[in-house]
Length: 65
Image (cartoon, rainbow, N blue to C red):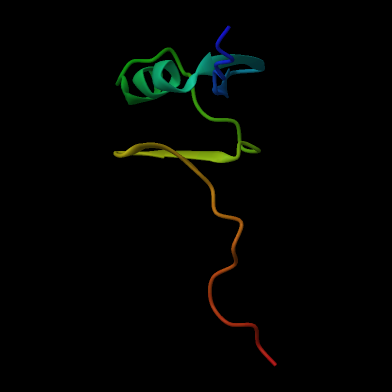
């Protein structure tokens, strides 16, 4: 038996949150009239023209001394 992982991402419309497979979430987010679905503000993903990507947790710039 093959163990296959399905990666999901959570989308939100109003106060409703639902998990979708990443490829389906990308299709929903790329639609002009998607019913209001968007990534929650606390999501670890960002969405742009290249699709969903994991947010970097690295800080940019240098630390002031």
